[in-house]
Length: 300
Image (cartoon, rainbow, N blue to C red; front, side, top):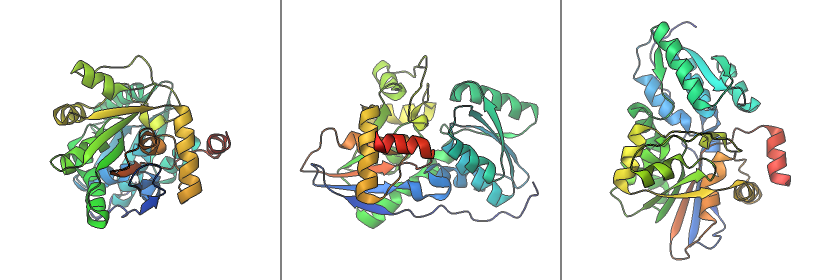
């Protein structure tokens, strides 16, 4: 892929949607399904790519959304990108990756297997490995989401943020950690790597991570994210498949938001124990989901 002069590749300023309160004083949704590449990941990707030399060759590992966002950002800068993703990655995400011009390698295994192969590939070819979540430039780029919320709607009392590798919640802590807002992390009940790590006061690695919300299926959270969440004293809630399906149905019915499983996790957690005295914000992190899976979740 030919290189080109460095240019600004700003993320989309996504909408904030007011939902029915569902037991809260109010609930706002930050709808990152409308972000470039269909997920919040583009924010960090764009910021990272803008820091790199124009001749860089990039390599990454991802469960889908990070790779898609990085592919779009790399394409805008004219940089080459090779992506290692699990073979189980939804077709909708794989098409966005290749559609943006990246080369894709399908891996038999999960995210961690992809990272091992991607790092090995990058090292052998002197390419730049871009980590999906444990990278200071990626985390810094995600902070723009929280600045937009503050500018448009003010600070919420409680903010629910999905936790995969932890980059998005670490960005929230960096931006709002000294404010009155309580940040709550949300994980999939079958893959609570952050919750278990905070309890153990060290990063733990799960034996496996499988299920609907592939964006939350990370066996070991990032070191930077863990430190930020530990220092902050992050409260983590977990959600299961039925809760995710319910949240997806409500988001679609009330706001026309087609959230993927991980994207609906924050809203699912907000529905668990609402507080009528407090204003809630939920980050819908993405909307890249295969049609058949979407239909099964909504109709089931």
